[in-house]
Each structure stands twice: as structure tokens, then as C-alpha cells.
Image (tube, rainbow, N blue to C red; front, side, top):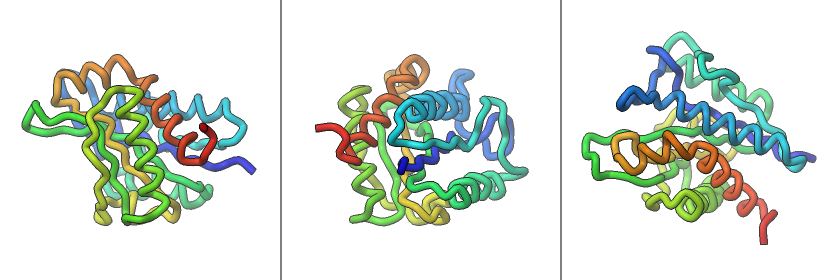
Length: 189
């Protein structure tokens, strides 16, 4: 039986639950592109089934921030997904802050072990700095999903090096997450 992976392209285009915007690049667009690439890769692997939260770059979920987050959680819970991955880009007023990090609901959990593999793969494949795994039970999508969930911050739009990778290496980010999944499930030696 295939492993069901729900891939959430964090945020929306426009003003409802909008993400960061730097130099005309919208976080929601980067998130969507990486999620779409990841979805396409997973769809080619018979060991997985995949569902995306947003199926077009212009799709808006919900009428406000809360209903947007609830829509993503409901889709994953109702499917029901085996794992939930929410794809994001980070923002910081300090342009020197860079790297990838992953947020989870609880330590010493399947979500943490999955996060370890995904973060390791982002570091090795995309050459991102390792900013660690953080427990944050306040994040809506982590708190309300009924399966192991990762909120993946690919990199910082506010850091020049990360920004360039987030714009030009979106497929590579998706490949890195896929490799992390393969490592987690023991599909790679």
C-alpha cells in the first residue's frame, strides 16, 4: 500500500494568509513551485501517493488566515494522509541569517525523525546551512494535523545566497526533500 504524503504549499498569493515578499519574489510562489515539483516526483514513485494543498499557483485557500490554515489541515486529515509536509521560506530583518530549519509538534517522534532526514538532505543536496529542528506546538498545521507533520523552512528570502537558491534551484529543493523521505523510509542504503 502506498504511503500517502500531503504536500502543503504554505501561504497564498494575494492578501489572504500571504507570506513574505522580497524583491518581487513571493514566498507563496516559491512554496508552490517546490511543492509542485515534489508532488510530480512523488507521483512517479509507486511507493507514494501524493496530494497537494494548492493545485495552481493562483489558488487561494480560505477567506482569512485561520480558514486558510484550517483548509490545509482538513484536506490532510480527511484524505487521510500518512505524513504532512508544509513548505515555506523564511524571513528575517538581519540579512546575514540563512539556512534551512524544520518545525515539529513534539520531540522524539516520527515527525522529528523525518525532519532529521529532510534537513540533512537539504544541507547535503542544496548546500544549505543546518539551522536545526525546533519544537513549536503553537504552529497551527502542526497542532491540528493527525499525522506526523513537518513545517519546512527552505531558506531565507532575506539572505542573498539563500534567495538566489530559492529562486533558481526550486527543483533541487524538491529533490532534496524527496531524498529525505527515501532515507526516512529506508528506501536508500
